Image (cartoon, rainbow, N blue to C red):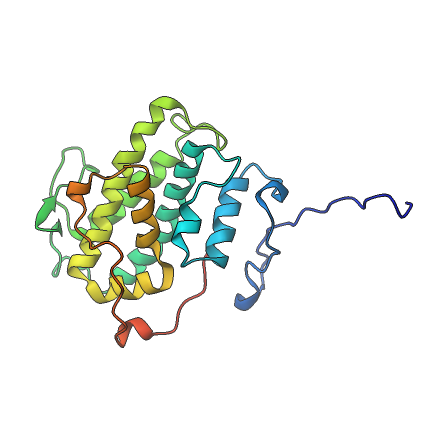
Amino acid sequence: MTDLETPPQRHTLRRLYPGTRLENTFAWPVESLDALDSSFNVQEYLQQTIRTHRNQVDMLVELPKGIDDDVWQYEHLRQICLELGLLVVALAPECTVEHCPDMKADGWQYLCAAHPATQSCPAFDYIIHTLDGATVLLNNTKYFPSRISVPEPSLKHFQSIARRIYRIFAHAYGHHREVYEFFENETFLYARFSLLFRKYELVPPSLVTIPENEEPQQDEYSRRPTTASLF
């Protein structure tokens, strides 16, 4: 090879191998969207940007050049469902049947549609059922057969998913404020989700009651050491 020749490009293998130390997880080089040679490049780019700029929600939600607007919404909703699993773990010790026998938020009681007939459900079960249903729907190839485009008829599901996800945040905010504040201090997930659903009008403003741009309280609970990113 002469000095004028360009060496072949090597694409980073984004793999977590057995035995990798926690501090070394996801220690891949930051790459541009064009450099991510994968069928899941939008997901990888979004997760990479979250790891490096977690608190810059405006940057995270802004549509990158070259990405389809509908695909961007789709990947964000997938990612939010993934990260909400961490909130579920945090809520588990106190969002019990005894403390939260019904799914309530903002003075409303929500019925669970995961049963043969719509019925009341303990809040924690409702949250699990909601996340399971959203995940199954977003991974259903009948409605979302590709990661590079979204069929027009499937766009209607975005609003339904976003409204149900909002109820999880609203319940945590209203009934488990310390857990909510701690989680939000770490992840800025609601801030990101809020900007997303406002930008794309996925949740009607009349249903939104969590104050916009509220600063989490820095109490003893919220100052606990942060956990490592799980994606």
